[in-house]
Structures are given as structure tokens and as C-alpha cells.
Length: 116
Length: 114
Image 1 (cartoon, one colour):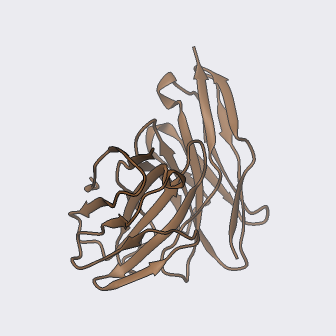
Image 2 (cartoon, each protein chain N blue to C red):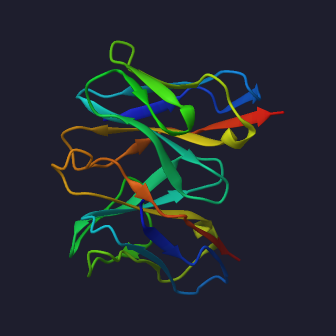
């Protein structure tokens, strides 16, 4: 059973606010990912991490930032939210390379963000 | 570069009928292939995956998929659908040699009617 958590599940905020979306996993996975998904659309990778103190930009440019200070925790921050940031944000994790199923990603329930 | 194309954006089907959701991919190297399902307001759940071996892969909830290397396809099938199968389905590909990044298709909405 995959254990990956995201909070909050829903967030409605005003323009200009700073927000942090939380993502935690209890599986000890090295790799973690953040995706952005607009309604009815595909997932776009915006950030990923291969371990503590490792973060990389994804395929879709994003104004958000991430940090990876602990293996289990991968928060995403928007310094100044705008209506264009309105979307669903999905966090995922996977095991390290070499274990045979390293490419399978486990997903959290997502955070639906609305910026007014 | 890899890409994934899901050929149908929406598939309406009656309950207990068979269904096929089509997925084609493009890659110059060996790949792993996945099908995920997303129910409303939830994250993605793995249905099945192809890593190697038999080209016919069985997954959860009665779904199966067949990897066809010559046609670069990985179509998802179920012989008899239920109302509860109504959801969004995503095909994804990952190069076997890279560090685990998935490329997703655009998604197919399966709508099962009573």
C-alpha cells in the first residue's frame, strides 16, 4: 500500500499570497516528483528530486520552488500566487534505480489550488 | 525524445460491454510502459505496467494491456466494464535507461453508461 500524503487537499487564496503545498511519503523512496495538471488534461512534470539536497526543474516551466531537506518531505512553494497558478498539483514518489520497479510512481491525492 | 499519444479523448461505452483504450508511443530506445487510472478528485493509481517478458500484462480490476513493439502500441482492454470503471485513464512511458521520469499521454475519459 502506497503511503504518500498531500496537504491541503483544496486551497483557495488571493493573489499575491505565499503558499506551500506539502507532500510526504513514508515509503523511504529516494525519488520524488511534482506534477501540474489542468482539468481534463495531461500531467506535466514541474520539479523532481533524486534524494536529499537534490532538486531539478521539470519539463514544464514553473514559478514554484521546491526543497528536499528530508527524504520523506518534498514541499512546493509559490512566493506570490497568481490566477495563472490555478491548477491541480500532484506529488509522486518512486524507489531508487536498480530495484526492478524503480520507474513505478506512487501518487498522492493531489492539491487543488484556486487563486482568486 | 519520447512522446505518448492516446488516440481517443473520450470513450463512451455501455455497462458490461468490452472496451479498448488506445495508446501509441514514440521512443528511440527501450521503454517501460504504464497505465494509470484517476478517479475524480483523486491522485493516480497504477493499473498495470510492462517492464519486460510477456507482452500481455494483466492488471487490477480486470484490465489487461498488450505491448506491441513493432506498432509501438500499448492498448488497454477490459472484456466487460462496470459503472465504477468510469474515470480518466493515462498511458505513460519511461526510458529504461533514464532516472525514472514518466511521460504521460493526454488521457482518455472512459464513461460507462447503464
